[in-house]
Image (cartoon, rainbow, N blue to C red):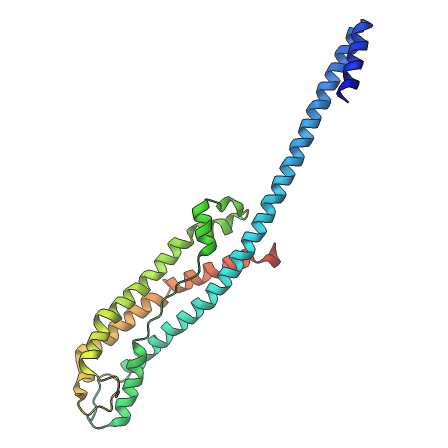
Length: 246
């Protein structure tokens, strides 16, 4: 093809047809430019296709990760809610007035207190998020809202986990030491050595109230609900990354 164009140029020059040569040269330049533009368009299309395929794989993995995280989150929230319910059950009986030998009352209180200590933590899988952070690949996500949610996920998670961290610290540092000092867990409240006045004290009542306060910080109150915020973000990420919606 190059030899063909060269022969045409040489023939036009040998025949002194300069104007035709000039037009031909311009036409040849135009053809070259068009060829370059076509090549660039094909390359851009190919790059977009590759990026699109990468995004689809990323969204599919992100979707599955957050579907699993939602299952775990619902379990954790359910545990926190049950602990809060047990707090309310105890508070409803304040002030305790118990006969030291009343086994039924002791066992009922034991049931509530034993579950009052339950304290789970939401530790979601973040393999895809961490991969995006480490490789600075957030631009692979074309949806602006989804990209913003993914970028802000760690901050949202930290805000929620602060409540759980405070709750665990209270259980480890305050609630458990108090219970260990006064109760024999292997025998529950059937232990005859138990001083029933312990659970009738204002100190015990304050511990239960404080435990409830920590749980409310996790579950939220009125319009300030960290658990509601993180649930909304999880649901939205699932919706926007769902392969069926792409």
